[in-house]
Length: 411
Image (cartoon, rainbow, N blue to C red; front, top):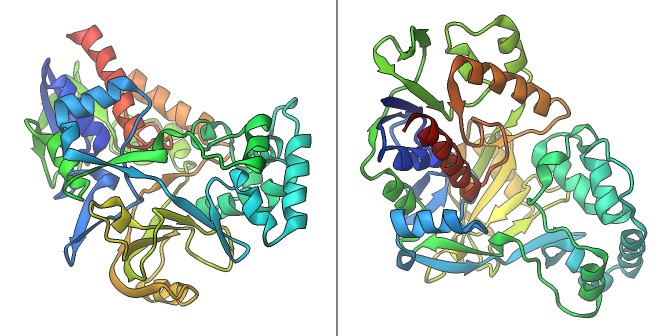
């Protein structure tokens, strides 16, 4: 049985590694380089991420075993402590903000009091209608309106009152009232899986991506422009024939390359929203933390990824500055003028697909498209193949789950 996988990102490579032990697998990649949105670039000897800040850890032991035992030995990684900060009201405080109320009290006691009062009076006995209401119910009105709603409006370029909230599970550390109280009297840190993360000893995430590709048949510079079902086979670009297709292609694009796609599915696909991201690699003054978040609307950057602190030994003078959307090189230089520690721009990149936007219609829309693809016989996988905000570890976990399903059915 011959399986065609569209896309050589983390998801496509992961499922390819598993399925190649059972089937004839070929991966089709439109770019000259593998890795999808996780791929890296080297500039002046510094490796940085073109989209986001991809790091690896997981609470799933099967995912950890797959990576460390089959792909890249644990000895080839080093552990990095996540030291995230928030630039809030012109002050640097620790992330997550709900455990930093003592720090807020040092510069605004009234605000700290209102955050605390509202948190303890917050109720969860009604179903939220949107992401903003979810924040208010979980964190109280003051913290939601002072930080969570404006920051999420910035990072999604979407009003949280118009966004779905169901995607946010496991994406944020959510304190209960006891842990919030304890944070007021002692130092408390979040226990999310990525509070510590693994990074390759090479100081280049591409080392892991390349290891994930070993032994795989990958055709690069091969954009999929046409898919047609002929009998019980799938023909790509009129020349490549497969018994089964797994697609990591974005859901808003794949309906337009399938010959038999109904008009209604194409219409639905146009409703899916996503964000591009523009980033710039900077040489900076030394910074101790790994991430800095900027909720202030006067600062265009939504976060800085201090990539040099992912390295071993640390090289704390390098930072990736991110802005949602497409921005010019000159725009990025102007945005940086508000932050003196950014000293010298080294590189610049504008992505295509970077982040799924969870508007109120996204779930029904993406399910409609996936249902068509399932009926057509195409499996979907990955952040944009499933239209979900998956980190690297979840992409691997979903690849493992889908491969198990395919092996059980066809193996």
